[in-house]
Amino acid sequence: MKRIIFLFTASIFPILSIAEQQATVPASTCFLEQYSESVDCPSNSQVFIPMQHSMEMFEHDLACLKEAEQMIEMSVCFMGGKILKQLLAVFNERLKARPELEVYILGSPMLLTDHDYREIALLRNNYPDRFHLQLTVSTPCESLEYRVTDNHIKCMIVDEKYFSIGGTNFDEALCTDGRFTPPPVEGASPARSILPRGVRDYDIVGKGSLAKEIRAVFHKHYALWEHYEQHSYADFINDPEYFADKSHYKPLDPSKPQAQVVAIDHSAEQIATSNAQLFVSGPHQAKANCIAQEYARLIKGAKQEIVIGNLYSNPSPPICDALKQSVARGVALTYITNGRYSDSPFFCQFFFLR
Image (tube, rainbow, N blue to C red):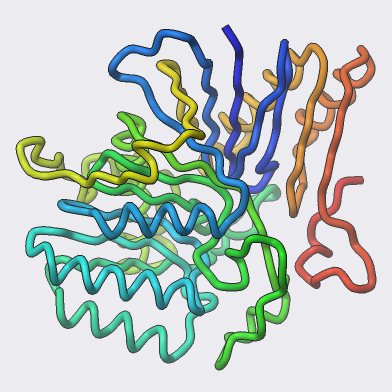
């Protein structure tokens, strides 16, 4: 049996591989998952396809969205530019073609332009009961570890069957193949001035029962931000589990048609596994952050090599200690992160491994 470990987390590290016999890992943001690949996978196995760059993920997402029959859910974090324009166009086409389809979007308004707001308003007006968009905001919090609470999840679920998950934001500057720097966005938000002009990230697309788990997580977070919009800061609840029975989540009808996506179903890059774990964390967990704990556990168990590649890296002391201990016992460590140079984006100043 070959062991494959993928890790997805929010802002500690988006890429980590731990080799026991063989290391194979692309990964990125929002969630942490661990897979073991076996030769004989039962019918409930998951299928994963590692993406080489953000645009490859986006193309797979579009392929899924264009086949959606019952439900689309997306947590996009930052959104804007040509990427958002393409998404909204696909939503409009699919909502028009499938009268029972619903769309739920959770995202930040940080990079939205006046044109974006107008396009979103059109969808809301045309499909008031089927197109749902909830905006998030950076909410101050009373904590020595966290200054604000916000949504950092990037994921897509179609018909509780297909999904993508990783580090890519759905914005033209933050979703590229890494080979060019996108031109400035017309009418751009001032917030863009602190962000990189171009970003390439890592993601995974897949198919299987894990889509149902991710979907349930999505709706807890959607309900959290919906509640905050309707209440005051004093009533802010940052634990998504509080909303487990207060969300818009509803089971899909298995007798109705579901999406069929050839690009995923027949991909030669598929990795199949019957053992997948989903970890979700956030500031509500304070010092008992389950993803940070799992990182530390896996790092401490490394036998040969640890490879970390992450922009904006700011690992917690337990993870740093685990890395130091692993290196001390002879485990090879490769760590790639952003620098702080004269030509580095301003945002990089806030993250640097010391």
